[in-house]
Image (cartoon, rainbow, N blue to C red; front, side, top):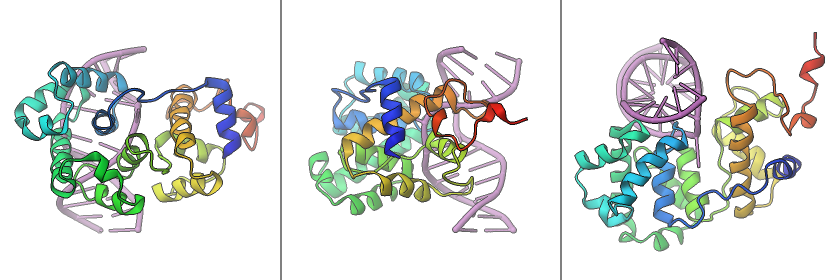
Length: 217
DNA sequence: TGCCAGGCCGGGT
DNA sequence: ACCCGGCATGGC
């Protein structure tokens, strides 16, 4: 898949996802962006920032009713309030509230622990590991799935782990590459690989297609 | 105006 | 092990 990465980077350049933010802010963003556009998440994050609530202790002590109100723009606000609460409870119980301690845990062990937190599934766990902890796990999302399927590298029934294996076995375990690659996939996916868009237009990945869609009659 | 977004859970088969 | 309905807001 490295050729895909090169093609995307050449086309879009560095995406600098989540730059200059604290690890906890990245985690909050990873939870709030579940099936939600970033413009909505951004409104919720700003509400939290304005109220100086982007810390573990603040989220731990805030009343759920107030947290719900503040993150409301990001959608699923009752669910996500529970998830944020569950995560900080996990962090305080298992790691005395220290992200530094948490991220010292071996990747596979920590991944299992994160998946046990209610509201954190595979993509969110991997986002936290990669973008907040710099652990080399490849983040799979709906776009990565769709792109691989359209390019004939997998089938529609492939699981999250199947897709992840395709990327991880063909790339060195480099968190900087994984970071950029996932962001680039989201970028190209938004433009050229949305559900209702059958053709790929000027997608920079077109040259990797097994056949040219235009020429089929 | 409807459809969609950087998913996940719980109950049912 | 999969399948499906529910969860919710703001943007285009």
